[in-house]
Length: 278
Image 1: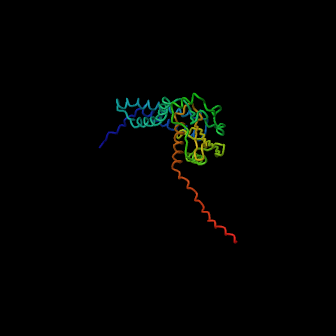
Image 2: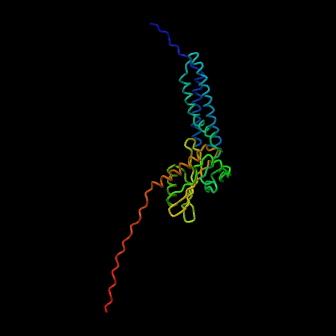
Image 3: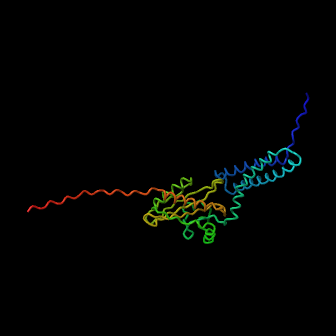
């Protein structure tokens, strides 16, 4: 019996182009992230590559929406490609859109500290930061920080400066921060930890300095400064990093077992001296 050959439904060209463009944007995005994390290029061309990928994702989204018209009106194929392109574009643009909303709500600052009047200073990290960014910006930044992050304040703990310093150093190592300098606390000298933290997705470098000050035999104060190495806006990342670090230090100190008092050695009873014979 003769059968009529099956006629394939033509696919929407817009849907196919949207799908291909979305795949290209995904590939370029992954490539730009790898370039940033592996330090294959300077940050400016790497960010330009990332911005180009986002532009392609946005164009793919517009083409996907446009392809719905012939698919619905003419019954054209390509719905799967259009939906796939739309999903990829949304995933690529979701995080930048989230950062955009954060930028509208938070002040444009990138250097946060618990002590704006006497902020911890970068020493070794000053040589790694761009010129002129090692110094704290000043009172204007402090006022913006106070309004946006009033809870970023020094932490006082009931532990010695040495014990607090050890806890802070362990937490920095646990976070996979690259510790570039550490100075143990000593009489008349603060404990200082300088480390480099990286953002989870793009791998941007943020510089952190932790200062531990003894304020008593069993009391210490912790000040932290976290500053982005590039960009004028940190989208709240530095404040969140400081807040989480201080909370973890406080919890670690509070849960540490109290040192047991050393048992007193019993002194042997002294025998009375023999009386002299008369």
